[in-house]
Image 1 (cartoon, rainbow, N blue to C red):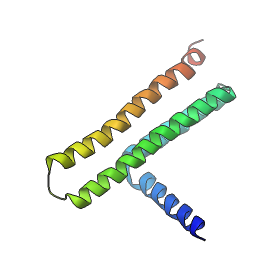
Image 2 (cartoon, rainbow, N blue to C red):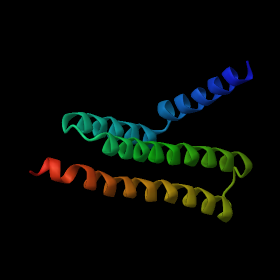
Image 3 (cartoon, rainbow, N blue to C red):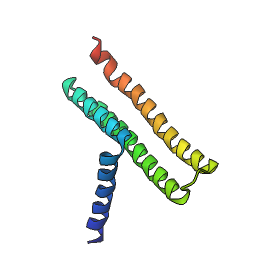
Length: 115
């Protein structure tokens, strides 16, 4: 029963992020577009695996960012320079992952888009 409860809580966290966080909604939309392009251009199994790992990396980074921002807001409701650093660093991690995903998308799709 504990395993099922853990999955329930995990799904609740994902649903929370997808329903309430604008940035993750943008990432999910981009992921759906990329998956559609992968289907359209018939990416190989390896290319699809790389794409799915990339999508998972971006969405995971965004979920961690949301968790960090939420806990920082809870423990430091007033402005504090270290709270700002924590939130900025978490957002920076998402940015690094998103930029990396653009590079991977370039490698996967460029030649297929412009043959």
